[in-house]
Image (cartoon, rainbow, N blue to C red; front, side, top):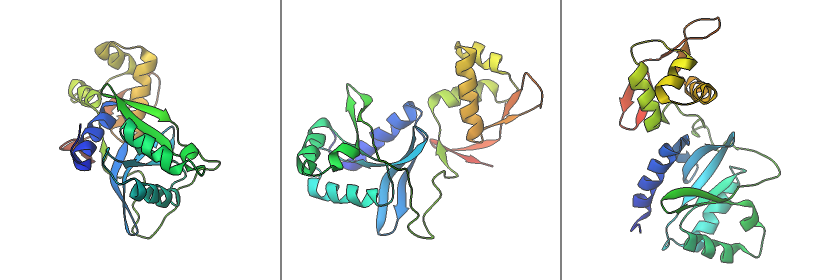
Length: 209
């Protein structure tokens, strides 16, 4: 389906955004970089992206390298490549601990969760960036919220009404945007009112200003 890993990565990024997955691409470490670091189930997880004709031996080496830095590692690839990886790693427990993601009928699927007895992220050098970067990706749904409320403060009930969702779901969206620094609380009493912080669009990214 995809002729190159770069082409596949562009598709992966769109799907990450569509699914509301916060990610950082090309996470630099000593001697190279990791394709993506994602926030998954409250953990920072590394993701390696491959296509069917990627080199399987190089992939195994890269996954082992990533496991030295991240306790939880995912391989995101077509089902055929994941099968090759399973065959190449069946002699040890690597296959049992690496997480697997793929696409089925255009939908991002987690076939196997990344596991480890302990959770860790090791800093490899002074140049290693923070895991929660200044720039973070936002979704189309986020942009809809920004557009509807860019010039006025609002309450949870306002967001629920505009998006036609339950107040509990609206509150979760507000919590996420507030955690990302894109919403601020206007008052200190209940019900709380919110307003959108000033942001500058950078393509599909935002910069806090």
